[in-house]
Amino acid sequence: MQETQHTQESKARVLWGNASVDGALHQGWFIGHVLEHAHDLRSTQTVEVKWSRHKAGEEQPQWTMTQQAVTLCVLIKGIVFIRFPWTECILAHEGDYVIWSADLPHRLIVAEDALILTIRWPSIPEDKKEPVQSGGTDQEELESRCKRHIFEGSVE
Image (cartoon, rainbow, N blue to C red):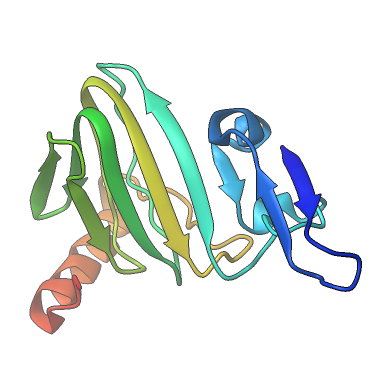
């Protein structure tokens, strides 16, 4: 990451770098609360941004979700499936995206080597919920949550 300051009197700053390099220590996240020790423009609780590369055949084995953050995934290249309990979104063309609300289980399946830009807001420490397991009360909770999202039409 490189930095320049416009003037001595101004607090306006410009930062530039490489998303892949800057996010390497934080699972691809290069803007957000995860950079709390950076003390620069990238460290914020307003938004988090991730640059991620995925290999064909990768699949999240468990459902994951956030408690409060909205998530937007934009496909740069490749083919990926974002699976929700009742539907699957296919991102196959440059610029394809999917956006979903908080508290909604999802999984990523990679069909072709892919590059994805993920934006999540707000950027809240510990917002990611424990993965939902299949079977038992967790499965019942998942089904209940999904029905609530379907009936409320909260997939925005």
